[in-house]
Length: 146
Image 1 (cartoon, helix red, strand yellow):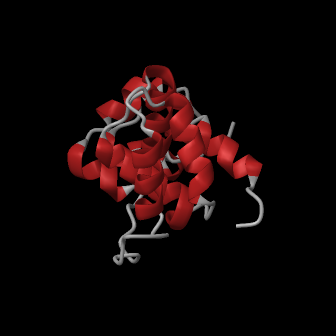
Image 2: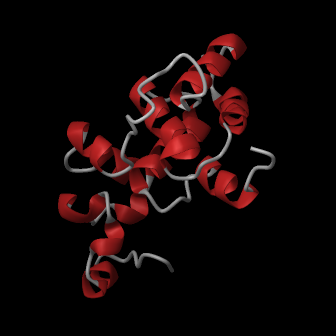
């Protein structure tokens, strides 16, 4: 944990990871100052031990910057817990940036609200838009990677 990968951290912070569920949650946080606790779990897990492997401390600092209901002690404890740095023995439980959101928002309405460019993507592709055929991406006016 010597240094943060600021490219990864910045993409996470600004909702540009390429994972629509994670990105929509981070956009919601920046615009409203709030995120559901399960969204907090998913984004924290993604940053620390699910995909980006960054220190919980940078996540704590970013959440502290935006959360309206933030409390330094609780925020720090939650980040330590969710990163499996302390107080948590189920380190093998990781929230998937794809399947976790599908459990509560099968059609991706939350994603479509926060990322309007994906509004034409059907449920089949909304959590994994890179799997949509290029012809359909063009039709839906959102080509992944461009």
